[in-house]
Image 1 (cartoon, rainbow, N blue to C red):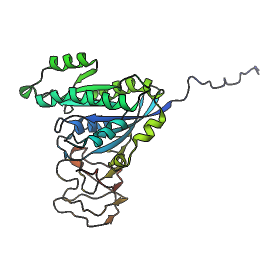
Image 2 (image 1 turned 180 degrees about the vertical axis):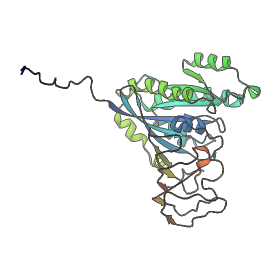
Image 3 (image 1 turned 45 degrees about the horizontal axis):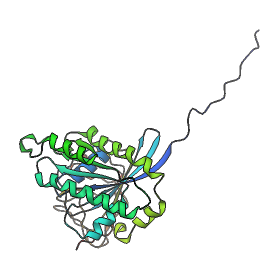
Image 4 (image 1 turned 60 degrees about the vertical axis):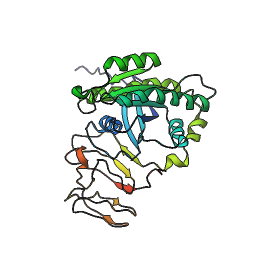
Length: 304
């Protein structure tokens, strides 16, 4: 009988552990160009056409890009005229920037150059030790509305070449992959600057004003009918342009509403109300049922 045998070969490490990075992205552009639609499309792979244009939110989203685990913090700005100090705080907060215009709105296209110069000016003044300009991507949205087009693809390409910036023409309504490509490209531009960026600068950028912006947390476990998120909404925040609660909507298992009530067509919760149950939320297009939510309230960003 053959008694020869071999021991199993030891397992070998084939590579290093994935690194984890946090990247702050600021979405800029005029109102109604689709900034929130672009952001939510990237995070949830869903399209929602209508939002409250006065709300500002920081979305938190985690996913893997190559060997990196990336923690995105995406500030979706309101896009309305505001105090210069407020917009500067938001620009200082960001590592990279997406400037969105609509191909159906010439005025929003004309605003792009001003926003690019503003971002460069604020960052150059704040980061005197760094000669590198902040990464910016110009995004032309709503290319599916061809009959309403007022800005040609060539217009966008020429502007981006003049400013030496990346350019993407997309439809947040129809294109999930092309929307994700915007954030992936921006991440690749931001990474080389993160190691050279002084951490003290990023700490200073977290001001009291920024802390008051509501935050929504999300993960990559988003399925076709599940957000798998922990959401933080302002007292009167809505994810769509109408209400977040339908006639028979049920709040999540740890839902707590603050001093201002949130209501649907026949559903209202008063001050400091709490409801416990298994949740089923429609959320105006984030899926037929958004499960796994935990809602709480915080103050909206102050508006003058």
